Image 1: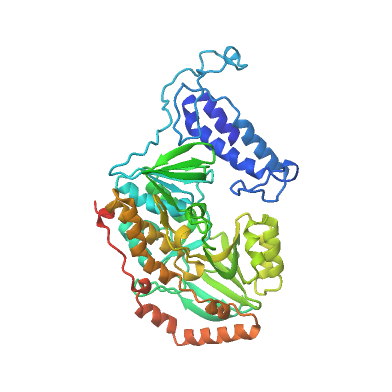
Image 2: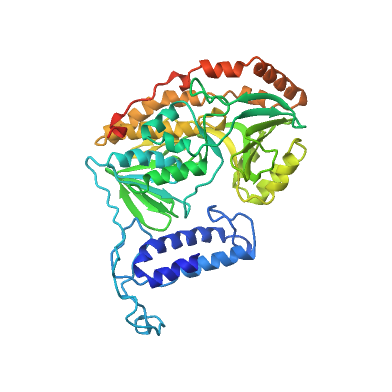
Length: 534
């Protein structure tokens, strides 16, 4: 692919400003992976550190991307914006033996400048228009980018991956998040991408069903364990990207190295050495946010509330027995296995374990093979379909592990830098409201910015004041409940199965769904008609 792109840029010079930054971003990512023993190159270029894998194909791919960024892309002399990693050389096209190259081809070839446009300038103006740099994680940042760009603000989304990461496991919409999507006008589009999950069942080590909670598809009342709006993360990412790409500028293959606040501007320095100034910097870079780390006071203690639970999720080939009814299996020593099938070819697998060891918190930073080895050892005797899942895990490429935490900090902003989504208030998967929390937070932040674009500090204060009660509700996860739900003994599992079976026999979950409010904690979603009224 790198060879093809570089060849196209040589033959059609005006494509160079588009192609070269992408090649350079990939090369920079590959370079960080080529830091193993004897400069061995890993496979996962999106990982900022060597992933511990070795193979000749990986070495060849890295060599290819490095070589193709060394090609002299000759275009008309121009001044490149600091927002782009491309800098056009001053040598007129084409480069020949007389101008530093060794070409013996037609000296008049490639001299036409037809269709060439210099790289787009990214000078962000102040006044009544807020220039926003929405940094990393397209999934989180696209939501606020949608609203701000709709109000006429210039929005730039910077994603550290060299491409759109349209992947990930199953997520859902609930409560106030559904209303936010309605106001975006995207509810019908999302309905067309939903996963057909009919409910959730609890099974024993032999696969026998002990209790089943059906999805509430009535459109009334509260959602059950399965939401009416279950969707794959990748589908939602593509949907958001398609809805914003014409009015939001996306830059892939970069990450933020540092930033400084200078008066009414935030000067951001990127990983490729470039820099740019913005009126506003939004950190949407997830629970491990580097932006959050940079704005917290030095005396701040650990921003995480550790729930002592760790999770791994990956995809395996689907079998005939993998139905649209999701299944959960409890195993002694605080282990849980969940299976969910989202299409005709793949099944999602989730491993969860309760472990209070502080040493285990570093597992997500370990090489991939070491991560898989941990889960293989811990779940070797977990029962049910553990042998099948562990065997498939060895070869799966779509694998991710993390510690389950909540992010709890006193303030979500400093000056003109503000946090949103998991970077500000990660609620953890146990809340069932992580995606909804990000949607709602982006909506409230955009609404306050639209009302106070001439006083961003006031906008941020209002954003926190209005959203904090909602976040406090989301983060009400009782550690005692987690210990009970993830028991250490087979006796504890029997007790859970007995009570769940009794509740389902009496149709208690169904009645609770039908006659409960879907709104989380009774918190009312603020109204910002200026965001969605034509």
